[in-house]
Image (cartoon, rainbow, N blue to C red; front, side, top):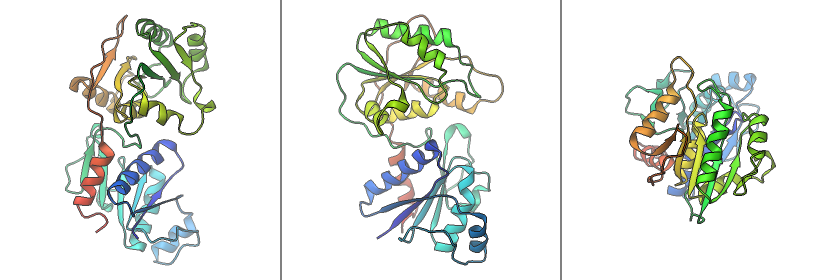
Length: 299
């Protein structure tokens, strides 16, 4: 039975990408096993360099491919792939040369080079799957201060109030680890009857996946790029709360502008929210999995 090993640095966003791809591969190849391991210690990496077995405990099943996202995972992935005679798949632009990996899946906004073993994806891969939508359901997701956007709290609170006041469906709002407590307090002080504030850390595992999968609409602050692509993958009609851009080169903002230009998201930068246009759900993990299999992965 074939196996996929995911080398994970423990960061939820990176693991989410790898699991999204691995699970999409598993849907195409149901007998595929998935195992997760951490980057190896230096002594184990040195052992692999001379083709000796590492001391660390590895999964029992031999891998057909190793997946990785995050700089700390690259060397472990490459050396284990060589040792196990397996393929290596990197997501996100690596710190090591791209040519060292067998396959690469990189977001379009990173402007990756053209290569026969490289697939450009629309945003980062994720684990979302569309599900039957609950009538009159909506989710609001907020980020916080970032390298790419200024967090304009008064403006954002006003936009949320305008949205919830103009659309009387039941809205569930959640922040992230970056969301200032003052923003959530200001929103709670509005006392809007159709707005429920749900602190993400207080919700059960899988809460956000369930909400996005079953919600008709989702509004996201534009700094939360991963959440934007998760909402689109979940099949939500999606809108973005505009925030002021910071100066300098901003690849993430370029990706957001491309989504706006294609009509996949609405852009709320005025006093009232614009209408949301239905858009086909993204299925980038499925597309990437099919592409990898067609290019020889697992054969």
